[in-house]
Amino acid sequence: MTSLIDIGVRLDALIAGPPAPADAGELLVLGEQALEQWVIARGKQPTQDKREGFRILALHRQGAEKDPSFNACRETCRELVYHYNLLTLQPEHPESGQRARMMGWVVNHLYLFISGKMETEQLGEFCCASKPLRETVDAEAKAQ
Image 1 (cartoon, rainbow, N blue to C red):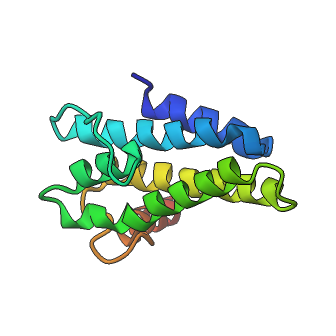
Image 2: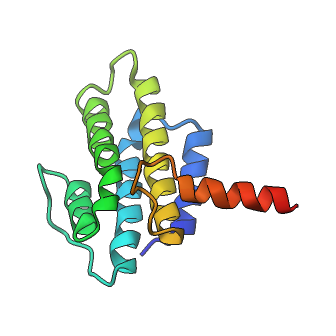
């Protein structure tokens, strides 16, 4: 099982690269691994099922069970699938490089949301702008 820290380190390396269209599979797996961490933190075994052909969508559904605030990242998961499909179905498209960068940013957004949820469970109740985390960071900055 890949730790959340290791996922973040790998994402940082990929995004700095920037990611190539060939990285689409790894980026999708990193998103799945981040969701696995959320499911495990909730005391469940991550599903191997698929929804609409993708495990990441089944993992999101499992992670959102009895936690409506987790639905804040549902569209992020769907956007990851969208970019994965673009990159794998049209690998030679002239915009593949930009699509890969966008997929990297989207999976990073998912990773940051899940990392934030692990620290502040209320994250996502209003939006994924992470107001509770911003308030904490602002308070810490003022204290210094």
